Length: 295
Image 1 (cartoon, rainbow, N blue to C red):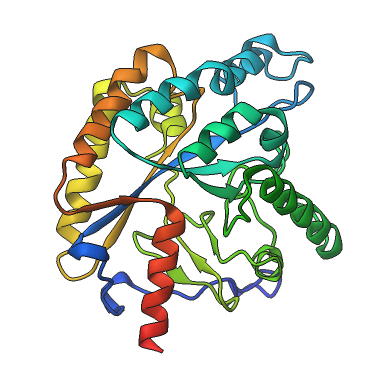
Image 2 (tube, rainbow, N blue to C red):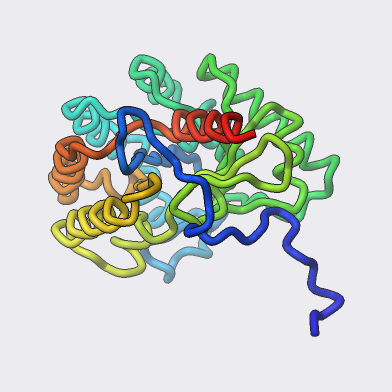
């Protein structure tokens, strides 16, 4: 018997991947892939993602704050070199505070035609506990700030820490956004129950924070994970396309001793004949076009 106090999931419906119309990616590709590059700003007086929990509650916390701050100062520029070498565009999950604090990163992304997604204000504050009116105000400020900085209004959203409220999809739709990455439950895009909003795959596991941090993988093991992910998705895609999302953070993958392994991952992915290495924006747009064709 269902507990009356437990809300029914009205955000999306159950849909087994074996019972959907086939997805055909451009050029007959079997796997669509994108680099989800997290460009984040952290507050110096709040705990957040940490490499060493022993000091995480201190203010200031030079050890953990400095580790995170390595990303925009150093790590991202190393990653940009690799992406440039392999002609790969990033799908940037952008804190609006990062758009204000790191103009050089925004300029680099504009020069490279990156896709920009709204990623909350700062990853020091999760997107939770907001009433509808307050969330509308917060989301409007985030989206407007990113649009002003990048010259392009974002069409995608991923909450800081992949967080939402029950109102988030509808409020995003009101602001003109059309997809979210927060629900890491599929290898294909799928419609939410909010009209004109879809979910695009993201990964909590093929994610450098999880692989290098929580699981302690080495660089060569990271490369093998990406290869294994691609090979299985390609096999699964015999009758319908799949999505490979590679979630990365410059303060993790951008570390010097990991740089060559990121480069190896890009070298492998760009060499695959059955891949469409693109952006999350383009994946969402193509999938929506297939929905229109089926209507």
